[in-house]
View 1 (cartoon, one colour):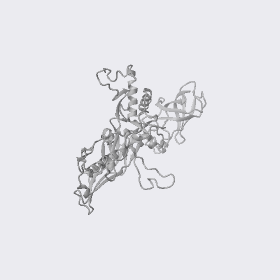
View 2: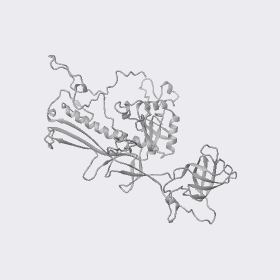
View 3: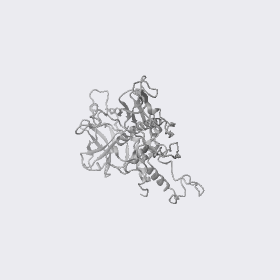
View 4: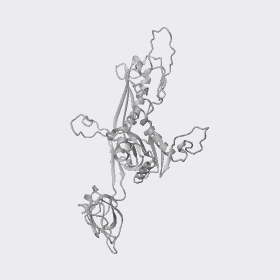
Length: 489
């Protein structure tokens, strides 16, 4: 690496509990008889220091009136088991297949009073036709189901092929249903299947912050003209500190929704978050790690990597348009991959529309591409900021909640889910925030002033206390359509 570590970027906090000379500029001696040449306006050497914007770009905010948010997502329409075994040897005309997959607790029901499927079992019925394949690729058969033992998780099958079973009785098998067949004049299908939904939930957390300043300091003017990212200007130092507290809180409102994890039950001892009465909440990274797709090689750098990603997306919701939010390293790697697809790319002579010449600025980046699906690329400031995830060591593969993340694929658009609060189907962005609110209390973003200064007359304390509060949770719907790019298995 050619970039030297010293001198480097400064991580000394600019927001300390009091204003110190080391916070912003070098102090000078007012006892000196010579007038210094001062720049009154503060120089914004780090540009826009806020990192929030991700959720505003890809999601929405909606109120909730409960401590728990629940929603239902559709299950698979078709049935497939991948951990099955046959009780018959090769060439057998019939076999008893044992399903080793976790059984559905209630895969089917009928209007009859005595139905073994009501208490759980396999969702395979007599008369259905199945395809059975060896997971090692040594053989495959098609057959018809002749009987089912729901409680035992087995079914009998008669093979269509004259040669009988093509695999041994020690191999792991995959079974899926492709249809049914009944003889003339026979009764209809005996059992029926109920729709299978998956129920997910999350809980909001309460976040707070505050800024305090004495009435005396509020009346003291400074010689530095301060400014903040939200446009606050002036010569009152407390204005800068108050506005920076506000901006910092707004950033935490987003980063908490990304990083939060639920408090787990203690395994030994006491003193963890759950023991202290904190519950946590399920953040975006936690949800995608557990319910979504993960690319464990850091980030995709070749077309074959993207082919693997596309193959997985084909098996999920097949969302047509997706956005890649990436750190700088991953973004450049994808630019290089796309440039290499052009026969002149190695010399850096033509990118994009391939009409560059020596008199124009060469654009070495790409905003998106199409390969099976549309992928749009965007830099994610949160992953680049050295005071946040941008300061973490590349390649960290420790605990899942702290592994180095280089980007995330987010599906565009919305999905239809059953909202248990509304009691009906509703369209929701795949990623959105729910905040607590009712007719009398809105906790989306509360701010209020207490004390005896700055216009507040709520106590006899000579200070202004600015309070901030929010109560919110993030909902990741259709997490199976997201992809997290990180290091580690």
